[in-house]
Image (tube, rainbow, N blue to C red; front, side, top):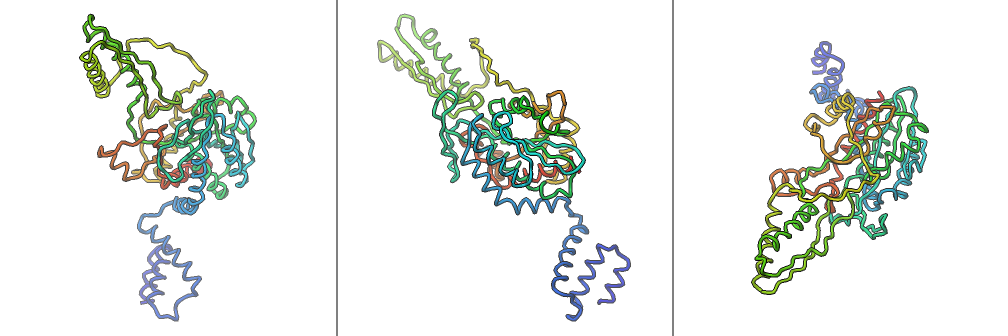
Length: 441
């Protein structure tokens, strides 16, 4: 059998040869076996070559294996960030930890850029400069996920109110993926040339962090990027806005006395209190209305109560808003410009994601009306091409249930928002690292 295999080997390529040689040796006599160490090495080569022969060779296999190996560290880091959230412009401890992570990897780190912003530079020869951004701030929400690592943090907001604090928008995931990608790139300096600019940005939720970092010299004190990339959480959701519904109910209630009761029957329906929400870009879980009802007769009182119930049910069932009042508009300096992905950069990175993760795991999505100040990095006079991608964060079982209509997933900025750490983190690290490697190859 050894001779027969040798004859076949002469007619096949070298990758096939190693596979057939090992087959021949294993089927031959015991005295023909090589030393154990050499045999183990040969077996490993055979496994790799078998993948090549079967068409399953994955150029990102090594990266994926390394990320999986690093997952325990990253999950601990994610839980740390989730347990210790900080509001916009208050990210003192978070930015310090971000800076420490970069210093451990050999980055040149500058802190307090535009407030609590962090900038880490790693130079590795001549090549492009790639900026990778993660946002750090959390939201004034009391967490209600039931997770064993749920946030119990409370603090004072800018108005002096005591509020709960929660990472309800995935910024803890963003920071973890950012760190994981930095760790992978630091280990793979033989695979890329150029300069990394890793930035931890404050106050994304307030729309002021990118503006503050740019104003503090991000593009003058540090290398100007040829490309800038970031990620944000993608969470399929439908949500009913209680503030909008409450506003419609308040207006509709005024028609009870004016249009539905006899003008000869004295009655009063007053909305004396309305409370809901903690922040302008967070849809709250509930809004409370407190009413005063006054009438001279039990019959009129019962009629008012029936009409209130009917109006509440009708508003809840209806769709759209019929504006019958013009609100007073006040402008605050928290404007966030639109984020437009550079088409050429987006197409390039999308192909990387398809190669690394598979076409079935890479989707093109329609534009949305969310606010994200990452767009500012591409609106300066340097005209840096930018690309932001979304990272799915829902467990398969939950996604399937939601698609069946059996489960309503919480939206971003919701007290029940709880991404599935694995595979969210590992997928994010693989995607971010692969994108940077391609841009710096």
